[in-house]
Length: 300
Image 1 (cartoon, rainbow, N blue to C red):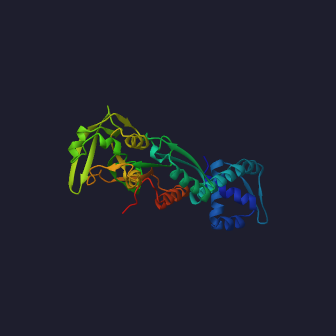
Image 2 (image 1 turned 30 degrees about the horizontal axis):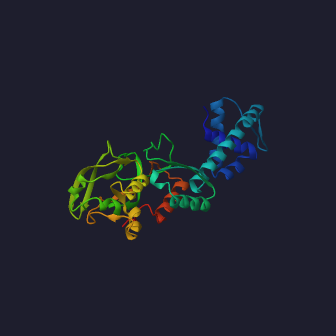
Image 3 (image 1 turned 90 degrees about the horizontal axis):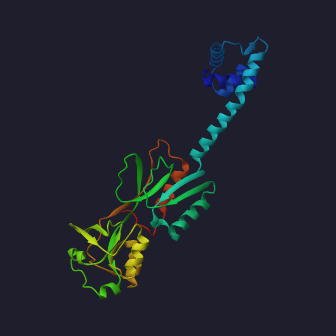
C-alpha cells in the first residue's frame, strides 16, 4: 500500500499545479516534495504527473488517482481537526458514574451549572452503587468512596468523609446509652451493606482503634435509607458527618460515643489510564474539586 504522506503530497501538488507552491503550503523543501511524488509513482508503477519546464499537468491515470484520493484525504483532515478540537475544547458526550448517595439536589444543581458553563458538552449520568468497569462500559469518569483496588485507573482525590455513630432520641429512650464501643454489640444497628444483617464497624479515637461485629433489623445499600431508618428509631447508624451535623445541632438525632468515629475515608474521581486527558474531563475534574460539596469534607 502506498505511503499516505506521499499521497497527501501528490494531492497538494495536483491541487496547486506546482511543486514550488505545494512545498510552500506543506512547509517542506521542493526537493522533498518532488522525491515523495516520484516515490509514489514508483510504488504504483504509473506516471501521475507530466512534467515540462513550462507546465505541470496530471496524466489520465494521475487524474483518476487524484479524484479517488482527494475526498478521503479531506475527510481524514476533517476528522483529525474534530479530534483536535475535542481534545482542546470541552465538547461532546461524557459518561459519568456516581454512587446512589449523589442522587440528591445539590449534585443535580452542580451538574446543571456545569452544563450551562460548557454548552458544548452532553452528559450520560449513571447513578448506581455497582462498581462499573470504566473501560468496558466506556465511562469517562466515576466517583468512588474508600479504598481503590483497580490499579489500571487514575485516581484524583477530591474530598474526605468521616462517619459518626448516631441514634434518634426515641431509640435511646428505650436503651442504655453505650459507654464504650463494645456496648454496640448489644444494640440494634442500621447497617450499610450488611451481609445477613451483620457488619463489621471500624472505629477510631485518637490512636485507639477497634473493630466490632454488629447486627440489626435493617441493612441497605445506600445512605439515604440507612439515614431514614436511623432517624425513625430503628437503631444506631454509622452515617457521614455531612448527614449528621445539622440534625445533631437541631437535636433531631444524638451523637453516640462522640469521641469515636470511623477512620477517614477518601473520595476519588477515577478515570481510565490515558496519555492525553480530553478537555471535557479536565474541566469536569477542575469543577468537581472546586465544588463545595455537602456530600464530603474538603481536603486538608
